[in-house]
Image 1 (cartoon, protein in one colour):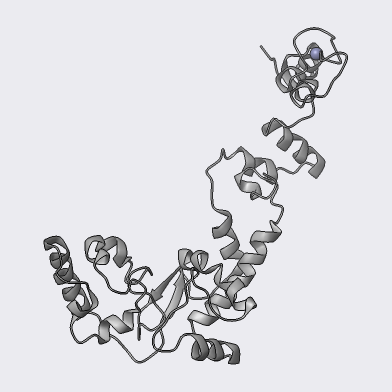
Image 2 (cartoon, rainbow, N blue to C red):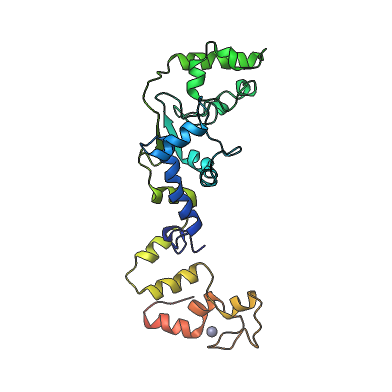
Length: 266
Ligand SMILES: [Zn+2]
């Protein structure tokens, strides 16, 4: 809970493991965008010749590179390819032209000989039906015709593909990747108001505990199985238990305090 961003109800403490992943993802950005670096040329030439592409199920290469490939699914989840030569993108599984072909043509996909084929290999095929186990079902045949029409409109260039990210930029940002990895939740706007108030940090943290029902009232101590002689309010020594609502609103002492400020609590 403390690692959730402040505006979403947490304390905004950095999750070190997620931050590490966000930083490591930049290697995949450099790799797929074929940056002009020696290690990238080395890995492409040594492990991914003949239009082979990396995958996380059968990783190859050094320990370091195999560790990086564990993040491949996360990278693909936040990236899509702008097709140029189609050599860095998986035909069926990657997002290109805003679609995933495995989902768009599910019946045809089930007949594919190579489900990890690259886009460039598909485009260079002599005949599209060579890529599938024949005979096709009627539905798969219709999907192949649709695919054929789609591929005829696809322009393959000589330049390298460009990978862009779901935050609308081709520039990788580890801070944005961190936000994607941590996800997003809808919470009450009161948390935004709380952290924007001008009061001291210790007061903000106190009310954050109140909002999260984590204040160490006697009621909370009992819920945490902590033994006390008495769980009643320390001010009035009456039932009910010392809960947050009692302590802040219903206790006679609290009512007096609110009364001094001109508020009445029913
Ligand atoms: Zn009381």
